[in-house]
Image 1 (tube, one colour):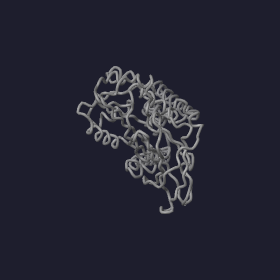
Image 2 (cartoon, one colour; image 1 turned 30 degrees about the horizontal axis):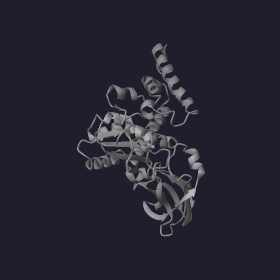
Image 3 (cartoon, rainbow, N blue to C red; image 1 turned 60 degrees about the vertical axis):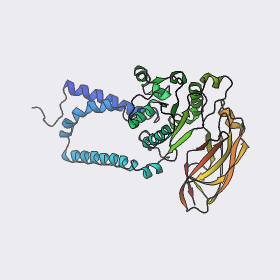
Image 4 (cartoon, rainbow, N blue to C red; image 1 turned 30 degrees about the vertical axis):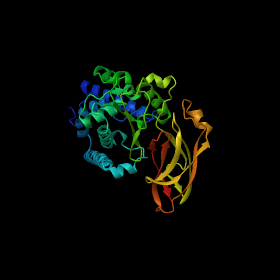
Length: 362
């Protein structure tokens, strides 16, 4: 007599079991050899869907205590996940998690960016076109601004996520100034969408496509964990080829804090060291910020030959004197966690706030 407590082990059930198990277990094993940039928990979704029809029969075959434990585990998992999303939907909590690995970068900053784009767009001519740096920016801005026809530049993210062919088919792939003609353009760039080691190269590519870049408007969200750069390009920018034939590309500033490191415990008086540069024009001065307020002006112009050695394409005229040092007096602040940042003043009049990192003042 057939045991009604056992799950159905017919050919169909075995097929779904093997199909789902191979996909889920395969990605589970892959996770030990890949990082978060090369594996994602949603990739095994087809395996979950294949195993889902087998779940009721499997649960019926388990003892009552195991079914109760499974139900409680699932309920706790659901509450935990919903609690996480509820917490990071609160801007103050999300901002405090800016340096954490679980920061929800794909879901943060879009409202702030849309508000900045609206404000910048309002100050430009009526025929200004909005152009996005990559497909994510284009999609989010299109949703926020009710414009489904925002063109998108070539970008590694477009290829990585398979969006490049779609953009071509939809007529939204932009080659730059050659497509824009003489119209003014508001170019929106996701500075945090590119690995930092490739960011300067990305800026130079944009110069080649868009022509000379004006001083940018920087939008830092959650202490700069999400960072966007807006360029208001007029219709007389000229031939982009000029930036590669005698006219230097002026990019947004680049910077790094060598000391203190993120999360470091420091005294009420502590040293800040690092480097900063701005291709094309250079920097006039560097200010140090704590919680968004200027607390010191750095001694800028110290020799840092290793910076030009790493950023080989950099055209800052001040290399190798791009280092800075300053001692900060934070005695007026209460002990605890504070956010350390930089304000970079370009020789072209630009002012850019750099991403912040936490320090613990004792």
